Length: 233
Length: 316
Image (cartoon, rainbow over all chains, first blue to last red; front, top):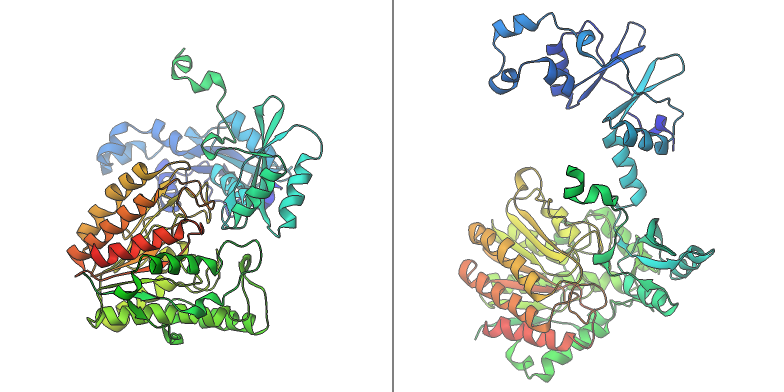
């Protein structure tokens, strides 16, 4: 669950003296959008993103390409000049959940991972987080997802898990969606089987309600963000 | 009337899957009964099952996997690779007979002795991967047949149409980098159905990019949407591809009375698909088409579905 396990360890970095054209080439070559800026002792001093580069250079550079004369004029522009100095970083001891919440509130695309001494240890991108959650969802393995509506009381999940386990079916994951209904929870077992008809029959016979797949949701935008009219206000 | 072959063998009933399993011998009995009671059996050319030469199976499956499967049956192992794949000591031999029978059907069509054929085989095949049994499937019958047509008969454009309600992951993976085999599948959307592949954005790989096409269908939808997607996604690309042979992975589990999916097709929709596929084969492949049974678990509906299926193969 710790960031140190999911982060990229071999980080492509620049130093404050790197020209922005070198930085641009590095991003293109490695298909990345974030370059941590480190000093001679690998201490994080800033971050350059593809957005910083775009803001620093005239639009025509991206549209028409750069002429040698143009390039000369910007040769003195260095990573140290355009980098963000107040970088949001996380320590390696953070969990994946910590990182998710930091990404959500900070709205950054990647988090440098920095130890107590300020040394860069790795970088965790939104893509790394997605990979972790694809793994958690179990959707890399063949299986079938169900959605069961249960009363919000103790022991419901156990009954469901027991009933399915008794049929010799194993679980890829079990998600529980909150805020489904005031007194209900939606349980999503991802079952590693094609033989779901039997499972459905058994759960229905036990009195559980199986939700119509077209009505499933594991997430929903808050009302304020959902309506285009409101978000324009 | 076309010369339609019908592959069926009583030994296909010997593959037993135990209790609580939908892929049972009764499926084939229902199919046979539907065809017989309509008086169609005499008009079909029966094809006898023969054991496939293992070298053909090895064109899709690793020899290590084939040996592992055989050894599992010999040692009376009850499952292979997943609890889904329930089996018995006879399963391996039955699977070899299924492949062999279909290859014989292909041979007779290529030799000009038959126009098309329906292969009522068990176990099914389209989920089987190169080295892994999956979703009730052990050998990928259709994929092996496509390889046979390529290697033995030198065909360069083989079109596979998979209308089983589940995505044929094994078939797609076998040919995803092969531009000579076009794999088209229509199935329940992978977020809501086994095996979780066959998404709209899967188009193949490398030189095979653009020769895989998937139409995921949302739960609850029925004939109109299914037919609209086939018209939109299959026929234009096959008109360009001009297949020399059409292989059909025929699964009937999208029927509204089949509890293996949330798709609500009627019996008539299956007739529509088959008519269009026979027309397609007529246009591009001199009528050459083999339909191979995959899923379809509603014993009540299988007789009429099978009857219509062979009737359309015979009469268009």
